[in-house]
Length: 205
Image: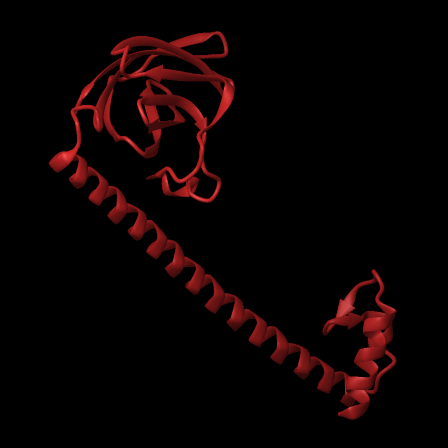
């Protein structure tokens, strides 16, 4: 067994890009006796099985952590809405109604009307539906400003809605609305080849 480990150590130093057998270079593998080849393959199979088991355990842990993070974020948002409902001003939670169309290539499609709520301090992914599909973008509400078509937090974008913990990052064609002065406006921006031409009506939730 000592010779096997010595041989494997030498092979690791040699490296190579040729085909492998039981984890080592095939040409080198053929130089071993049949007994040594069998021992090498058993060791390799055991290592592969252990690596697979560890990878499965890691995926389960990652999935569990992801679920807990999502659950915690939803709890924080729920508490935020509850706090605003009890003590916030009339603009702490807003309702946005969207109408309009999107342009895909040379074709224009009316969107199905959409209304959603958003709380101050929240960012969320919004998807508008049209006859042949849907188009999605991110909206955020911070201070007294609503941002359409933002760059979501890369650590939280998979959550589809989250509490804002950093500055809002925008694109060149992001649309910024001051809710203190604007309650209805036309919003136009482009996202991944789709042009959004929307009419937004904003009012307290």
